[in-house]
Image (cartoon, rainbow, N blue to C red; front, side, top):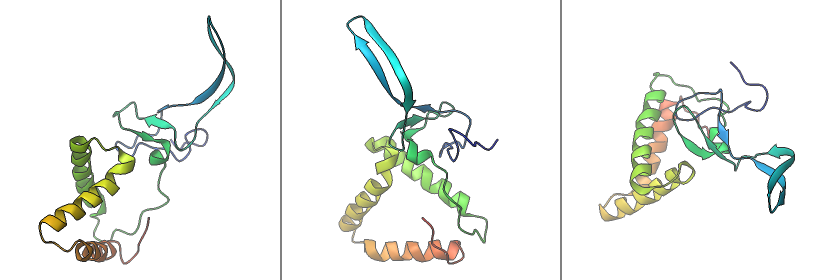
Length: 143
């Protein structure tokens, strides 16, 4: 089903489900010493905490937004390549406690430290990675 209302463009980046999510919403309440009553509507934005109830994946709502379109995949291997990277990123997140929003940048920074200590030229490796990516996507670069 294609969502066209509250969940339009939203899907779990881990398991792909699109039907329901737990989203932290902001509400206004009248609060007295004896309790609280919601007043008016509620709201959320791209910074709102979000969880997939199917797989438990959590992050900010903006991380659940579908990407526009994927680049070409001439050898039909790019989903596998992305899956291999996801395994490494999940292992890094489990080991360090980094959340999804910070994990890629943190891992890249830590790889720079690793390269320093193991006599590798990180910039050359990054250039090589870009060359591979462009070759694997028919020469197109997407974000």
